Amino acid sequence: MNKITRILVVVVTCLVIGYFSGMVTRTAITTWYPTLVKPSFNPPNWVFAPVWSMLYVMMGVAAGLIWNKIEFDKDLVKKALVLFAVQLALNGLWSYLFFGLKNPMLAGIEIILLWLMIFETYTKFEKINKIAGYLLIPYLLWVSFAMILNFSIWWLNK
Image (cartoon, rainbow, N blue to C red):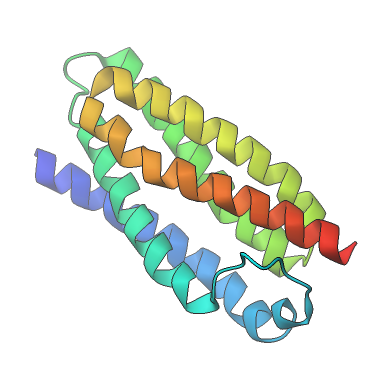
C-alpha cells in the first residue's frame, strides 16, 4: 500500500468515528444540551462540526504518515498506531458518555484519559515523524479546551 492510500484509509476511519460520535450527539444537542447551564466561553454549537472535521483529517494524515514508516521501525510504529487506535476509541466514547448517557462527570473522567492518550500518541508520533507529531498539537489543544469546558458544565449543573 502506498503513502497516499494509507493516509486516506486512516482519514476515512477517523471521519467515520467522528460521524458515529456525531450521531450520538445530534439528538442531545437539540434536547438535553440546551437545558444545561454553560460557561461564558462555551462556543456556539456550529463551531464543533467544522473543528472536529478538520481535527479528524489532521489526525488521519498524522497516523497515515506514521503507518508509512512501518518498514523502517515496525515495533515502534505498531506501538504508536495502537496508542492512536486507543485514543480514537476514547474520542468516540466521550460523545457517548457526555451526550448519550448525559453524564458530564463520567465524560470528564474519561476525557482525562483521552488527553493522556493523545499526549502519549503525540510523543510517539513525534519521534517517528515530526510532521505527524505536529499535526496532533491542535487536537491536543482542542481536547484541553474541551476538558475545561466539560468540567465547567459539570460544575455548573451538579
